[in-house]
Image 1 (cartoon, rainbow, N blue to C red):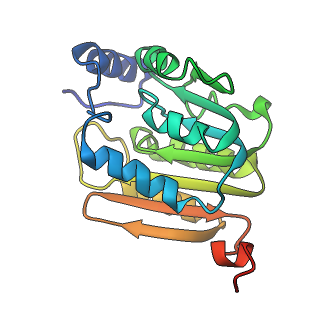
Image 2: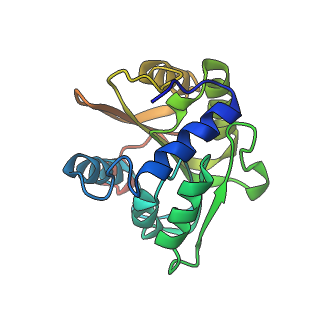
Length: 207
C-alpha cells in the first residue's frame, strides 16, 4: 500500500483500491478487536440517547448502525464512494440515517445545523495537521449546547496516516471542552469531551 498524501486524488485512489480488494478491508464486521472497540466507544457516551449525530468516516457503517439505535437523526459520511455505497446498503432499513460522500474538512455539514454528538472514529489521522485543526474547529462550532465530541483512534504508526493520533487528540484537547472520558490501551486512544462538564452520575443526580 502506498502513502496517503493530502492530495484528494491520491486518497481517492487509495480508498478505491482498498475497498476494491476486499468487501471488508479492515475486517470491522468479524474481528473481536473491532467489535470490542465499538462497544467501548458506545459505553463511553455520557447520554443514553441523542437528537442529532454526525459520524464522518463511517466506512461500512457498522458503528453507524449501533449509533442509529441511540439517536433520532444521524448523518454519516465517508471520503470513499465505495464505502458510502456499502454503508447505505447496511443502513437501508434505518430511515433516520443519511449516508453521504464528503471530503473533510471542506465539506463539513454546517448547513445541517448543530449536532448533539460528533463521532470521530479512525478518521482524523488521514488528514494533515492544518486540516485536523480546521476539522476540530468545525466540530467545536457545530456542537449543540451540552453536546458531546468523541474521538477514537489507532495508536501504532502505519504508512497511510498523515498525522499521529497524539497530534489529533492534542488538537481536540486544545478546543477547551471539558474531558469526560480518557481511555487508553496499547492499541487505541479514546477521549470524550463536552461543553457540559458534569459526570454521568452528576447528570443523574447520584452525586
